[in-house]
Image (tube, rainbow, N blue to C red; front, side, top):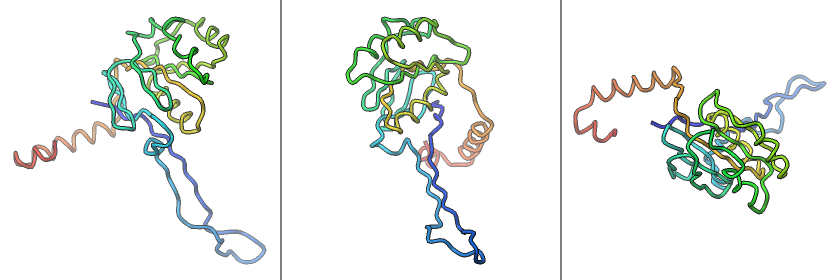
Length: 191
């Protein structure tokens, strides 16, 4: 089961009414609100749509198993097992690339996991800022910075534990009830 990564949105709200010296009157603005789902904009590059204990699903429909090194246009398998494996050697890919990235987002898996603090200084010496976050937050941060066209990379480890929200429990229960009320043929169509 994949857990959906928070998708960034940008909202442009245009005022309906303008206040002036005359009574309230309509402005020349369009009255519609516009919301863009960042993960749906393929020209923004690769983004993480969802993650699970096994890996990640990207906005281009590709699923990648295990830890990944993700860039705006490329994703690679990252050969580490856990946050404790993150060191100068495992991060070498991120500082030898051209053009140089501005910021590296490291998703360490679950909350409470950490990385040796010397890594931050090591990467700063290479001219790269580092943000170390739980993978859930790292996916969202990578997506946002990538959409802003920043020169960003993500080093993401799948979490071992997934938090389940009440909404997800309600949706699962509703799906279970629908499945039990369907005939076998209808059930196959839903799956």
